[in-house]
Image (spheres, one colour):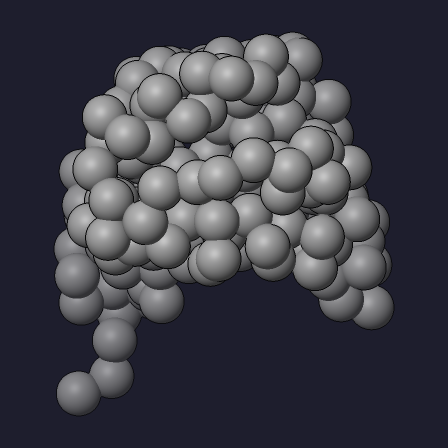
Length: 209
């Protein structure tokens, strides 16, 4: 059975509510689409959601189902937007090295608020994270992780966090401006506890929690 397709393109929408929640539908947002002061309710897997070259201005994203490994954000600009819900493995910002297509030149993020979101393995690429609001504990955010890797390597970390995360920070793309993790989730994977992680990250003023 072929999936239903819904397209939002070549439009300027203001103060609209978009419910992208039908698991049997593919949603395409892009090509000359501007959304301003809109609310987007997302309750589909990343494979059902296609975002290309969209301008999001002062929009609210209500993520009702965990959005995993969704890279399309880096093709679009987000300004003054707010996120609620769980996001894992998602990248935001400007990352032209990701692909040769023109769409990868267009990504940006500024003045956005993730304070009510749960971020796990999410990155800001090529954009200034100082304009953003990140979630507080039990999430934490490492600022400028590639450049700070030597400092982080200089101390002992609990469980496997040092071996798996810290030792590989220098291998991440140079455009990585921040890395956000969810402490309970990563602690389960890396044989430690949130409490041990919090004590370790408290030593660094460039880790927000």
